[in-house]
Length: 93
Image (cartoon, rainbow, N blue to C red; front, side, top):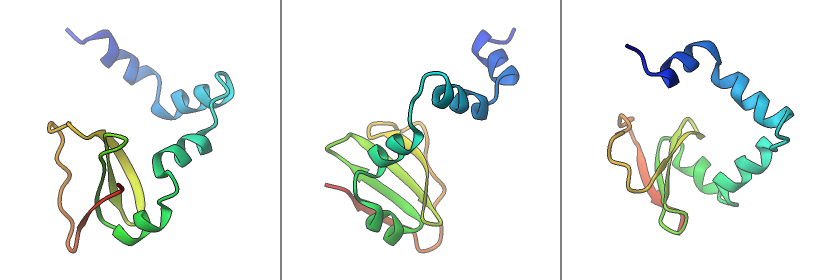
């Protein structure tokens, strides 16, 4: 038997969730982007493919092609990104 959360994911897309947060809850996605990058845009672009750890924020940013593709808790070990050729690791702080 499927969990109710799994069934909801099949009925409501992530795109719809983001648009709901933006349009109904009035959450500014650009403010979230800024909070994720925290003024370290140049570092994200420099890493291009890799992982950036922020010990201050306790997060890991996974970067592919100069774009942050996911954010993980620093302690998270359940998800390991595939290593890209020439991948770099950096710390934000």
